[in-house]
Amino acid sequence: MDFQDILFDVSDGIATITLNRPDKLNAFTGRMMYEIIAALDITDADDNVKVVIFTGAGRAFCAGAD
Picture 1 (spheres, one colour):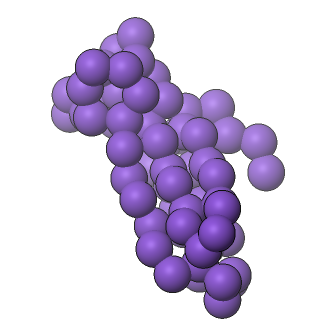
Picture 2: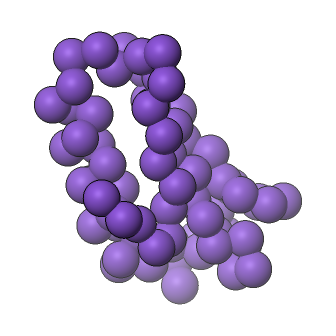
């Protein structure tokens, strides 16, 4: 699945979801919410995923809602 506002990776049982709007300090959008839900649906369907890590690109995790 292609995402615009997040990065999503699964490796060795660890899923990483990165908020990826560093120019806006990763301010949360409606599209970001739907992309996170889709990524979590993917991890939920994968029995090999044991951990989900949330992080933010750039210097801020999330500046709030946009």
